[in-house]
Length: 67
Image (cartoon, rainbow, N blue to C red; front, side):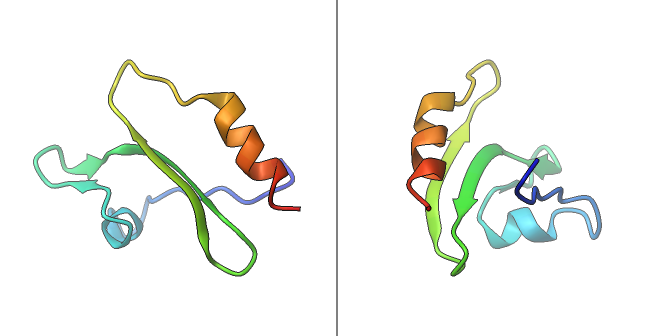
């Protein structure tokens, strides 16, 4: 992939806690897509419940608008 992805493996939960996505009850993060531009500005943020998939067209539109 031509862009970095983030996995919140260790220390467990630190990144998702910083983005307000940590689910203390489950001991895991909520599912989410976050797009951050080169300046560090969050341009897209959406959380998803199990069984609901992200809309790839909405995500692609945001990514294409970053250029």
